[in-house]
Amino acid sequence: MSIWRVRLTTETTQAQAYADALEEMTPSVSWMDGDEDGIVEVEAIFEEGEPDHHDVLQRLTKVARNALPDVIIEPLPDQDWLSLSYQSFPPKSVGRFWIYGSHVTEAPPHDSWPLRIDAATAFGSGEHPTTAGCLAAIEKMSHNHALKNVLDMGTGSGILAIAAVRAFKARVTAIDIDPESIRLTEVHARDNGVIDGIALEAGDGFNTPLVSQRAPYDMLIANILAGPLCEMAKAGAAVVAPGGYIILAGLLETQAEMVLAAWREQGCLLVERETRGEWTILTLQKLNA
Image (cartoon, rainbow, N blue to C red):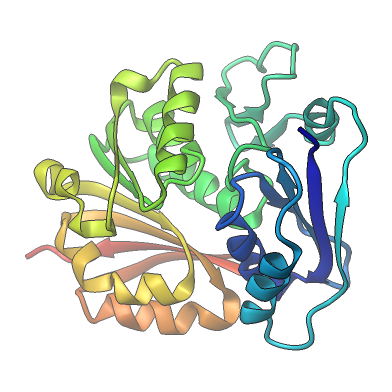
């Protein structure tokens, strides 16, 4: 069966919406920060043959804020495209975290926290500023805090859940609305030797039964989007223990005050605000009861 690719070039601020639309059709979607002009290429791979062109364009048009850029839908040549894709993702360091794919044969640096994540399988390979920012926040928190119970809401590839196990030796609960993300998280957790430290479940956010069963949490990590982060503030704060920490990402710098306001209403204080490009990562603490 032939393999097809959908790709388009767009502004960084629009890329996530296009990637989310394509991920509704295939899990193999990737994009990276581009040049100084804020232009990036979003790419989706369809392993099971030619996608419905009309469906692709309709989904992308639905989330476009302005005119839809040129969308290229093309078959890939008969070659090991996945290996070629991996070659464009060399190992990446974020603090002590060393993120690498299964194609990498070199040994992890001494005293690093290795994270084996294949970039082509799901959003969340450490390349995007929001993921890297969350990893940096987790590492910084590990310097002075011994957290034991962590919730990763919207786990994606599982990279942040695995990072929490590495940094804190915590028990981690990983939740995602997409069953494919949970499957991939389980694969990555096994590859990293931490499957015993992570409980996984696909479900409707904080309504997922596993969330309440394992609450309260010392830390909540949610790398999603600004809108959902605001909507989940009440339910999210409710499962965090008094004095617990919250890492929020997936929001643009221009959306940070809106997200902060929603969580401050739930008794959470800003601990740190980091900006990476156009993206902001917020670390909050829930006030003691």
